[in-house]
Image 1 (cartoon, rainbow, N blue to C red):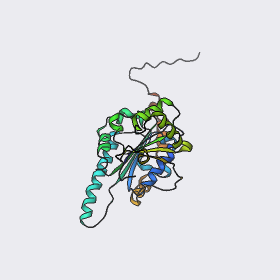
Image 2: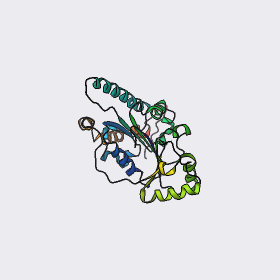
Image 3: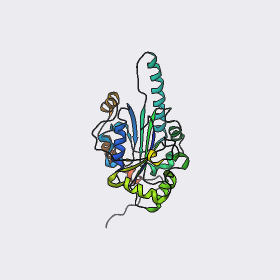
Image 4: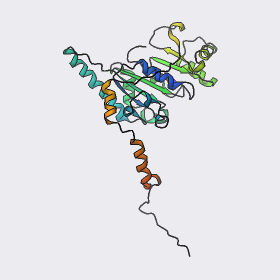
Length: 265
């Protein structure tokens, strides 16, 4: 794959999405730093086995996206300054947004996302977006991905959407469905390379199957910050605080509430 690509993966649950995402991160493990935004990871804790916890977010916030872009700009400027002194600094970064469609209203029209897709290469940012539905994002965003990973899909309606919106290089829907079915067997994936200016299927469409990887993403400094500042008990402490403060869970007593006491006789 090319340097600093934008990658979209369309996969419903149970099709191997997590493994393929991990393999993509493994491929770019040389990148010094990055961030993961994965709402479901709060419960299944998939990413923490290869991505430092302190950089994993469970909800999308505009300030997180803007900080990521700001970090990239700072690192690019730093790289240019160090280069003058003969010192090489890698300014690249990675952003993974995994199953974030439930929070789409928060980010779909965010200027930072547009900036990432339109100018990600200039920011030296690799961007990976995974979603369960073919039309989870608008057409203008769909057109800006370098690579499209399509995983197993049983629904004929969704296959048609995949064909019409991502795989129009195939001469017909039945032809696409036949190749797609073969490519996505056994948790594998069809990969479409949008960087190649050709309609030749053999040069544009590929098959990919993830391998089991054991690694930790990020530079020594990136991992070191995690080890120094991350509190593994943070979530447990926060839940304990919420349980202790009943007003957070049940809303407490409002100003105008009338308290009624009934005593037993």
